[in-house]
Image (cartoon, rainbow, N blue to C red; front, side, top):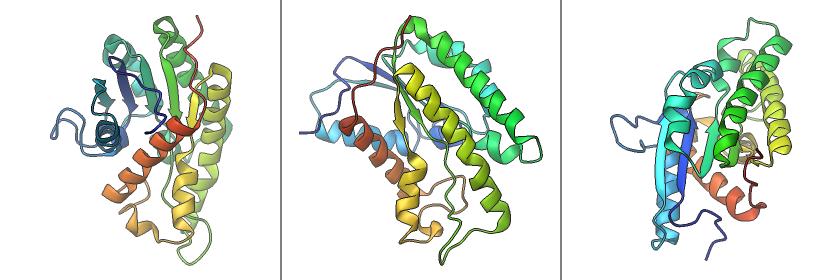
Length: 223
């Protein structure tokens, strides 16, 4: 039996961009990505737990977009658990802008959202934005992709800092992909570096499940 800390009767809300979205409007209510795959894992292992699952990913979102709909789409669901993965669109879409300026904006936007969630006291899970590419080896990325990987490290550091400050569980999705890319080409996990294929989504679901079962139980957000 797994050590999954999510209990029956609790409400789990996923918020993010297209990776979370995963065609949820065409395949309601959870899409066909890592959210649905994670839910399937939990249901198979714990059929007795009646957990309420909500997907609030929207394709194309950057962090400021998610902040604009945060109250209506996310907090209105009154989550007991809040799982957030956002940032890859910020990184890829703003390569021409000053790096530190973008990181500061990312930190400010995400901090503001987490502050607004505090009154509900959800348990927080922050998942790294990732990029399915590797800078070295037989499947080394091209220079433009290597620059994305280089810049993305800053976003992942910001996320780790916020997770530590707020007692959140930090899920290191980039490391999960890096372990695979030491032995498998990126094309087996994603047709292009931003959007995983079914195998890549399965890997994310497994990493989220592993982190939840192995790590300390996230604290409720402090008032």
